Amino acid sequence: MTYSPDIAFNSAAEIRAMQDKKLQETLAYLNEHSPFYRELFSQAKFNVKGIKSVDDLVGIPVTVKEDLQQRNDEFLCVPRSEIVEYSSTSGTLGSPVTIALTENDLQRLTYNEYCSFLSAETRPDDIIQLMLTLDRQFMAGMAYYAGLRKLGAGIIRVGPGVPSLQWETIQRLKPTAIVAVPSFILKLVQYAQEHKIDINACSVKKAICIGENIRDTDFSLNTLGKRITDAWHIQLFSTYASTEMQTAFTECVEGCGGHLQPELLIVELLDEMNRPVKPGEPGEVTITTLGVEGMPLLRYKTGDICVYDEKPCSCGRNTLRLSPVVGRKKQMIKFKGTTLYPPSLFDLLNEMDEVKDYVAEVYSNDIGMDEVKLHLLPVNDSEECDRKIRSNLQARLRVSPHIHYVSKEEMHKMQFPETGRKAVRFIDRRN
Image (cartoon, rainbow, N blue to C red; front, side, top):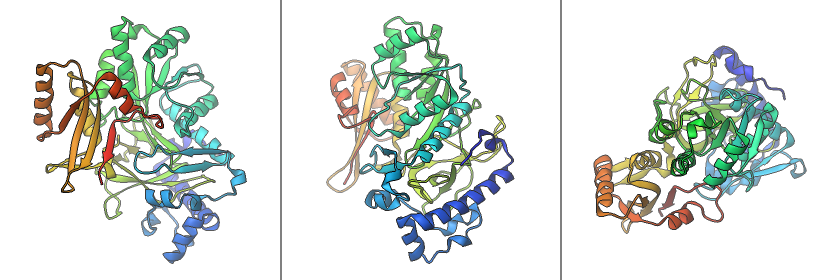
C-alpha cells in the first residue's frame, strides 16, 4: 500500500472520498479475516456491503477496551507466522493489550511517524535526541526511531530520565530537537538552572512532546507548557497517540491541534449514547484503522475525551484536528460533588511553586465514594509551605484532598515502578 503526506493538503471532498473507499476495503478485510468482527457482524445481522461511506459508520456497533482485553487473540487477522513485532499498551486502565504487527504494519507505522515529524517541521539535517524507551514492547519509541530513519535525520538514543546524561549528550552531540515527556523537560530546565547551564545557548530549538498535555482545549499553552517556554525558548509540538490506533496526531507550526492522518485512520468523537458530537464539544475518541493487516480495529472507543476542529488549518492541511486529551473516561473523579479529570488536577499542581513533584491517587471510601490523596514532594518542610499548598488547593478545587508529603526517593519509587515504562502520576485504586 502506498501513501503520500500530501493527502492532508487535498480538498475535504477528496479526503472523504479516499476514506470512503478505504473504509469499504477495511470492512471487507475484517469480514474475511477477523474472528471477532465476523462474529460481531453475524450477531448484529450486519451486511458490510451496505456501508458505502464514513457517514454510515453510525450503524456499526462500537468496540471497547474490554473486548480487546478479554478476546485479544480473536482480533488477529493473519497467521502468527506473519507477525514480526509484538507491542503492548501500558496497562494504564486494566491489563495490557498486545498489538501484533506484520511487516506492512511496521512500514505503515514508520510512515505515520515520518508524517508526524514533517508536521513538526523536522528536516533531514536535524539531529533528534530521543528521551524515551525503545524497549519493553513500547510502540511509540520504535515508531519515532523508524520515522526518523525514513526522514533521514540524525538520531541520538539516550533513553528516559537522567538529566545529567541528557545535558552531557546535548552539549557533546548538539541535537537540534528532543522527543520527551513535558514534565521531564521541566526537570531538564531545573537541572540546567541548578548547574548554571545556559539552556538558551544550547543547540536544541524544539521539542516533540509526548504523553502529557502542554495545551488547554483552546490550544493555548497550559501551565506546564508555559513553565517550559518561559525558561527555555524552544518551540513545543504537542502529540496524541495510542498503541491501538498505530497512528499519531501531531501539531503543525500553527499549534492548533494534532492533525489527523486521513489515509491511516478514521476518527469519530462520540457522546455517551455513541452519537457524534459537534466541533468544540467533548467526545470520546473512537477510531477505525485503515491499512492495518495484523489487528485492525473498527469503531474502537479509546477512552480518551477530546474536542475537535474541522476547519482548514493555516498550514494548508484540510484534516480534522484534535485537542489535547481532556481526560480519560474511566479516570473521571467525582469528589465531594466536584467532577475532576487528572489532567486538570495536574495543571493545577504544575502551577504551584511550593510543589516540586506529585502523584495523585484516587480510591473508594467505606461508602463507595471517591476519595483523593495527593502525594506531594514540597520545596521544603515548613508550615508556611504546607499552608500555601492547602489553601491553594482549597481555593482552586473548592474541596480539600488528603495530602501526603513524601521524600524525593519515595516519589521516584511511586513514579517509576519496576514493571513500568512511563512515569506514573495517577493511581486509581477504586473498587
